Amino acid sequence: MHSPVPGSPAAVSFRGVSKRYSGSRGTVQALDDVSFDIAPGEFFGLLGPNGAGKTTLISILAGLSQASAGHVLVHGHDVVIDYAAARRSLGIVPQELVFDPFFSVRETLQIQSGYFGVRTDRRANDAWIDELLEHLGLTDKADANTRQLSGGMKRRVLVAQALVHRPPVIVLDEPTAGVDVELRQTLWQFIARLNKEGHTVLLTTHYLEEAEALCGRLAMLKQGRVVALDRTSALLAGRASTMLRFKLDTPLPAALVAQARVIGRIVQIKTRNAAEVESVLATLRAAGAQPEDLEIGRADLEDVFLEIMHGEPLQVSA
Ligand SMILES: Nc1ncnc2c1ncn2[C@@H]1O[C@H](COP(=O)(O)OP(=O)(O)OP(=O)(O)O)[C@@H](O)[C@H]1O
Ligand SMILES: [Mg+2]
Image 1 (cartoon, rainbow, N blue to C red):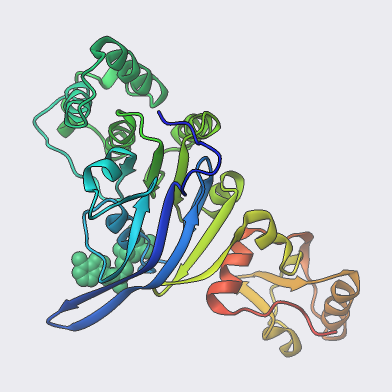
Image 2: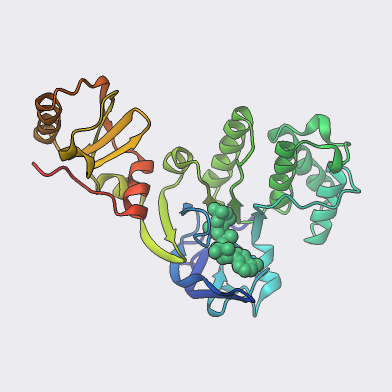
């Protein structure tokens, strides 16, 4: 693999990328002027609700779809003009499970490495395939036909396929959707190791605790636009930092409704400091409400995400 060279171009550079889909039912602006760079060696998260444009952006990066405007570079190679070089630098785990159902797991991986011209050292490559199979818990399925695998196992094969040519940039579009807890752990350990060894990682996921744990920097997309772009720690620090959570069997006092997030009996209210916590508790007490299982915790990435996506209140007015 290429190790990152200081001063070298961004691993991935999105510049003014827009994408419009036109169909019989009108047009959809899937991406609207998206620009950001991912530095070599970063573990970068791309977040956003369903339909925000994440897969569209990755399809353009992969050269599977053409941008309506703007361009994308991978290690300085334009994904349209210099497709082969850009594509060789990328290992992409697609969101959709697509396979040629006639091959075994091992054959699928061998075919993939042949496709990328990784034939120079066949033995070393076979050893790498064995290692991938091992790390992804597929060793005992190596000779099974991909058609016979469960959904989660098919996803593991997609991950192995993306990594088979040791790409410097690894792109994972919802790699853990439908994957069991154990594999999620081993998959993240493996990806984190590859990142430590210098591989750049671009990840989309709806599991925000995964993004919080893994990604050094995040972009959030909303309706095709970048609405947040920062270090994960800065996104967490820049928001209301304390979250008050409790259960309530009676209606929430009207004075608190606007600033609360309520799911069933669970109420969450963001506060900035102890005085605001006291003010919320005083309001509850004055209304005769009896909160149960009261907890005070830090706001997590899910709180930040919802706040950015829905413009939820940042703080409780004292
Ligand atoms: N081939 C297509 N033709 C028309 N519209 C499309 C096409 N692909 C995606 N879209 C639309 O573009 C928008 C962005 O879709 P995209 O798949 O990029 O979202 P996403 O962020 O990956 O969502 P998810 O979290 O559900 O995977 C959506 O409105 C979607 O309906
Ligand atoms: Mg998607």
